[in-house]
Amino acid sequence: MSQITLFGLGAMGQALAHRYLDKGYTTTIWNRTASKAHSSGLIAKGASQARTVTEGLEAADLVILCLLDNASVKDTLAQGIQALHGKTIVNLTNGTPSQARELSEWVGSLGAEYIHGGIMAVPDMIASGSPHSMLLYSGDGTVFERVENHLAHLGVSKYLGADPGSASLHDLALLSGMYGLFSGFLHATALARSARLQTGMSAEDFVSQLLTPWLSAMTQYLAALAKQIDSGDYATQGSNIAMQVAGMENIVSASEDAGVTAAFILPILGLMKRAVQGGFGGADVSAVVEFMGVER
Image (tube, rainbow, N blue to C red; front, side):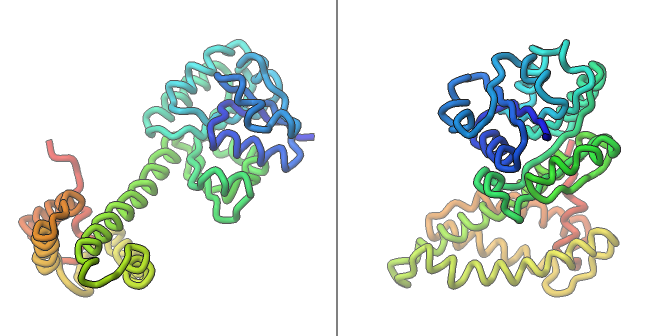
């Protein structure tokens, strides 16, 4: 029977543990607040509770961590250093690429193997085994191949190379895309809400009838923009950046007239203006990527 140890019983950690129990794994759990092992229902379901980090490490060769931050990961594992040798550590804690690389080096120096991961799903998706759950992994490819069958229970696995920081980088990149979508949604909905007395359109109606169909159509355009970025050929297929700057300035003006902040729009407008000033006014909006380096 397969064995696994899980450190961390937040919402996601509990979901991970429930998933492995449902798959018949002998599951050992540990959490800084020990009472969560019972309140989560995991003990009643058959999980074993480790009293110490060392006990948790000794219970299985495959150890998964999902904690608040990577400082907590190191602090936790440091409590059981003597038991780390020979273990395979899969860290699913959100953090930065540099943190993942530092942890990989530290764990490796103690004789353990390290894979870093990023969970692109919410807890309910993991616990239920949703086919839409996706997890990103990076680190030693040989190690990943050896444990991939165990990780596959959590969702679709995407291996992103030997650099331990790669999973974190792509995790954060995807989250950036998500928050960009959310910021556009919030600004658009605030603008539409300012006219609700005249239109009678609720936020739900605006989203379902207008915004979602529009965004779905625009999503299809992303593949063309990505192709331009890969090739470096930013020849416009529609409105060039200079034309779009004029439209963006209209959004800012309309927002001010409606009493809605344009804070979400101003950063991308600033980058678009830099692109125009840099000689890309006639190019497609994808050329803005060339101006996204940090100014020093």
